[in-house]
Image (cartoon, rainbow, N blue to C red; front, side, top):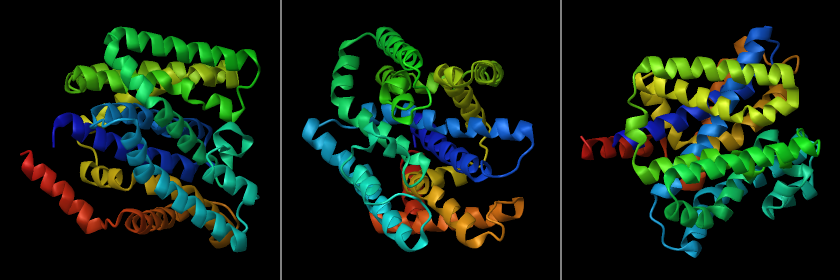
Length: 337
């Protein structure tokens, strides 16, 4: 496996791990410092947007129709399967106050423009944003191909900043379909595309470790200050620093090979794990937990349940098992050794 591919696989596994941990810990009564610190885990979505931009730019592009067909099979079909299962299970379980209208907003893909963007668990907003990126990717690819790398990054960053300013100006910083519209994260996606285009990934992740430590510390401090002193307005502008801090931490962990084998595997089930883990949390709190709360001793059970559900869903949607995924990775490693 080439270094840039290995890093992206590790990063996606790292991202899904921190996102799941963030959602597991979020309902708990935590010390103030921990309650703030876990928010960085939720920044894993920024890495997913970055990795999506890189991965799509790196993939073979055979025209608009084939691109949309591939995205539908790879992402939308599993998403439809999972949201349908959650909708049907919710009828007897009554975990969410969402019904047919909310379900159809997922299936007909208009939830990205309505308040139903947070139905059946608030995490589905990410899928809406990702689908928006898919819709504009053919145009973005053409523009990035025809533009100098520095210009592409600069223009996309300016667009994201201007969009953030517009959302702040109209007073809609807490409106999910606006604060999570794809323009908010455009620069992260384009940076991934540009790094792929220039082939500079290996150079970026091979700098001295102390540099990433400095970036992580400074970016984390700025992120915290923006939220602390500017509230929801600060949140609109802290994505850049949050992403930089998260990326630096991810590179450090990758370089020291922290939990490499586990995270490489979690990458292979990252989509079903992301789509189902909030349902597992909701089910556990409502039907299993004694006092309808999550405690530290509940976490191992939640982890096992979430992984079990993700593995089953992964098999049902892609026919891959733990064994076949592991063997596939071993085969790639052997070929590139």
